[in-house]
Image 1 (cartoon, rainbow, N blue to C red):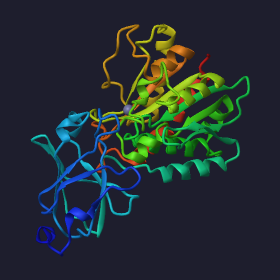
Image 2 (image 1 turned 135 degrees about the horizontal axis):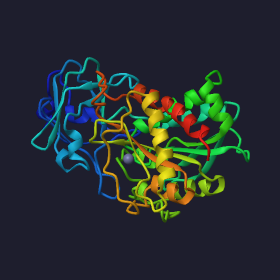
Image 3 (image 1 turned 45 degrees about the horizontal axis):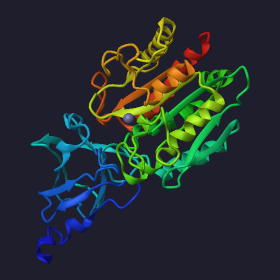
Image 4 (image 1 turned 90 degrees about the horizontal axis):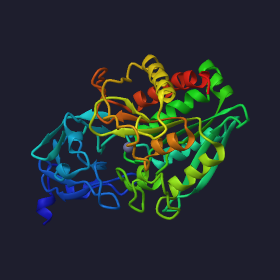
Length: 388
Ligand code: ZN
């Protein structure tokens, strides 16, 4: 079998593809020929979802690689592969797109690495180490408190950053991200929002902090993130279907975040996600909840209008179908929060691909997600200035 491993520069492709690292996910099926590499994405615990991939190819500098993800047709959102380009990086800081096509139910990535090692991923990863850096840096800023809400299934910390004090006249503004761990753009978004929020020379941030206490959970699902999951936690639960009855053993992440919300109350809630298929930024609101009325509709409209001004990357034409009144799925965070606290509560979706109306050579990217997060403070301020 040794001869099958000899290709080009005497490298063994099979041994040179790895994913045993933070947020890694790939299974090597066949790799004795660099132009016929067959890979599979490993399903999340729970077996009902997969789409996130992240792997490294070593020793392939100058070798034309054709890598087929052969179980792509069975991924959670096969329509997500249409017009999708995979992300790649040599330094794990700058991620670029590489030629990718969806053909015969397989996702085929073709690339000739320019350096010895190249990393490939569904979207620019946001590692747990990076998450720890974010938390560590933020806690050093005056006015920021780090609270460990509890432990995940695997024993990781569930981190909450509280920005500002929770005085009686302050509104409680909650922002959570990465219930679905494969939607890494959500944590890039939070990083950009947090950077601007903690800039005390930014007048918008200063007024937001005067009017509100902000509760930010940058990563609700660290176990799923580390394990390279698309949607589930380590117990195989989709956290955004656990909000009505979170279980301290199966979905402790939601259990603890919800308990903290009950302590603080909620006046504004943003649940940050990525959508595999739609090439748009959009929000999904509370139209389906039982207590929906004109005042709530106006409040959501005001927020959405402000966001349109704050970021040309946002749009309102395309999104999810609007549910009938009373038909909301209350196991989802924004519906549960909107109903429980009667507040503005939305799910925000960003693309994995790109924004169709404002495309960029890098597609949707960490930096664009960061800027989009920062832009949300303009809309949050508009919401905070409006009467309760
Ligand atoms: Zn999601």
